[in-house]
Image (cartoon, rainbow, N blue to C red; front, side, top):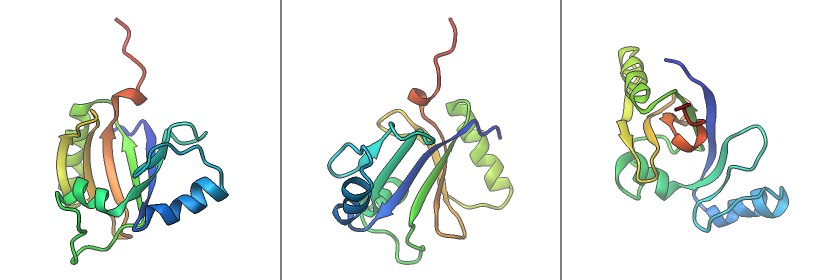
Length: 139
């Protein structure tokens, strides 16, 4: 596995509007979006967001309610690899090391390829490839 950079940090918010009071109103972060507040304009991270718990549950489990038998996550951290195929290979490597994936590598509607697992701390950990975060290959 060849992690190229930390691509995303997103707090998981049961009440996104309340979270906006800290991240937007108090800290002044330049977050865009109504339901999913996010930014690619914060130095030191390619993407920061306030991810509603219902959206995280939908992305991970295909339902708006977080499963009662899983710890409710507080954060999502994603590590980008060099290609969509590398996401699948990294997912297989993690499984071979005994980690249980929440879902296999798949392409999301916005073009990101991602596989996710839950860490023992309850964090959503993603191995991903986000095309817009990688410079174009020379022709």
